[in-house]
Length: 222
Image (cartoon, rainbow, N blue to C red; front, top):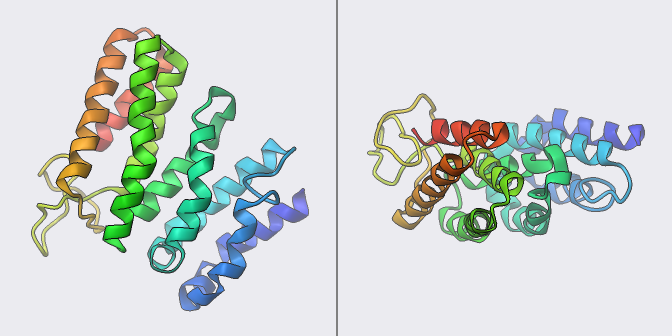
């Protein structure tokens, strides 16, 4: 297992090579997503560490990946995202952060918008179902997944060219230099998730996990 981990660590450290030669992505990336990595059948330790190395790689090379490997990566992530919301998946919710960073970097906008709806609609529906079923732990996980996903979305469709980008929902300036163009439908989905999260928190305000996850999401939306 340690030898396998060394490969993923090497990939995360070799981001400059990937940036210089995007044609290598089909060689570097597949082991992250198959049974050698995120889908390893026995080792939760390896799965989590592979996820952490993928976060490092995506943070350093998200533009290159979005332009050259978007479809393949989103296709691989989509079935995993449905599984990591389960409470027993633990810290694997970080996969939502990976998806958000790729889709929110402002490149391949039309395709990114399609994947955004495809990946986040189940979060919206799952949160509503958790509220209806009074499933506190599951609802908190959906709120946390939305908070992690939102890390990549830092601008708005209304941000003028050359101005400082705003948060996903507001028109107030942010501190980042990455402008993400959000359609009206995208912003409406964020608002709906935030409304449901606040309502869920109000109904379960004694639950620490729900409170923490909602505060993080609210902070991201301001």
